[in-house]
Length: 143
Image (cartoon, helix red, strand yellow):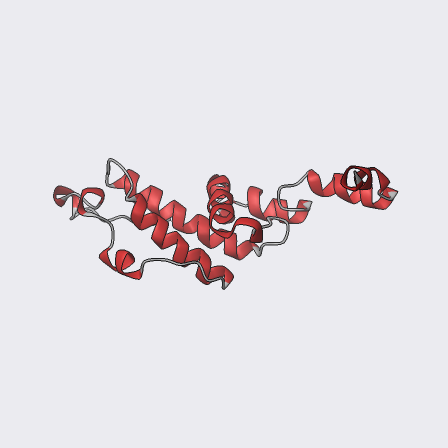
């Protein structure tokens, strides 16, 4: 079995690179610091961001090579949906809308054709998952 033998025949430098990069989700200490330790990069939403990107991009998503700003924008969208739900005390998420929305956002960010339903996006969030009438006067502000 050739594929089993190749892993044991790495040069010392290749083994070291493999060990170093496997210590970090994003490939190296610098990218890790920007993505997970800098509060501006929304580290709280990192896991959800990676999950969304790996779901919509599949094999095309590699956290070691993805542009940091691309993942940041996905995190920003996730953050805003979560804040919207919490601030207005909404009972759930409009998963169908979110799915179509993130298909469009991720496809546009990575310039990949991911099919989405534009009509569903134009409809917006369903009323049962939108701002309750008694809270319409309340304004959500972002920090």
